[in-house]
Amino acid sequence: MSIFHNSTSPTFILTGVPGLEWAHVWISIPFCCLYFTALSGNTLILFMVLTEPTLHEPMYYFLSMLSTTDIGLCISTLVTVLGIFWLNAREISFNACLSQMFFIHLFTFMESSVLLAMAFDRFVAISNPLRYAAILTHARIAQIGLAVVTRGTLILIPLVLLLKRLVFCHSHVLHHSYCFHPDVMKLSCSDTKINSAFGLTAIISTAGVDSIFILLSYVLIIRSVLSIASPEERKKAFSTCISHITAVAIFYIPLISLSFVHRFGKRAPPYVPTLIANVYLLIPPVMNPIIYSVKTKQIQKAVLKLLCSKGHLF
Image (cartoon, rainbow, N blue to C red; front, side):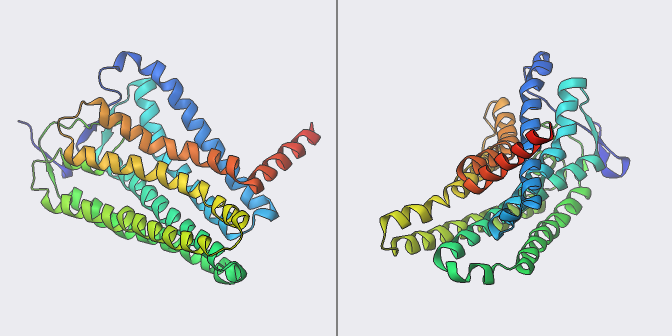
């Protein structure tokens, strides 16, 4: 058995879709479409929020943060995923793997934090509309954004450093087309109890805690909505939350499913983690711009205004 330590810069082997290696070129077509849709959709959201004065409100600033994390998540995986499908470029160095893993998890934790901030935004808008602008000032939104980045970074640095101390002597074939913490950790022949415990703590203290506070926010939102006398006003108030509820569902369900598969699904077929992993990475970035464009009238108006202005230029 060959044993290599991280000091010798081990090389890991990424995996595409197990059993369908012959069809990777064809599989790359829908992946390219998804990446293009995600990047173009989220870039459009960012552009509109930055340039359209009517969207200079807390709700849309948080939406721009969500789009930024989605763009970061796509870019973090695009090179290795398409490299496998197009060029069969499956090798990745240990340091490059750790860097990719850091950014994938960073943007995942950031997206969870932003979804929590958006839940708080909806709670303030519905329960205390008269003080909405006073509570969520530009300075406070900037502080929330800084806290989102700082929180994710501080949690992930120890996670990466703990991986660097490990010795790798098992098969160094990863189960995904990108580097994922539980996947890398399983390849070590060192004692990984600390790594596993810290990884579980990291996911619980971020996505776990955030999901609880999001749920609590909606309990308070529902209570505020039910206190509104007019049924029409109740419907209008709750309709502003539909996009956010959908975004929360398409983010947390694949994330929780992937974590459970890695920790408890040892007997699952090899394509199951691959399928869930790709859904977890691509579906939220693809769907979030579509959801907010379809459900939010201000976004629709901004898109139409942009299209009309482009039409006049030609």
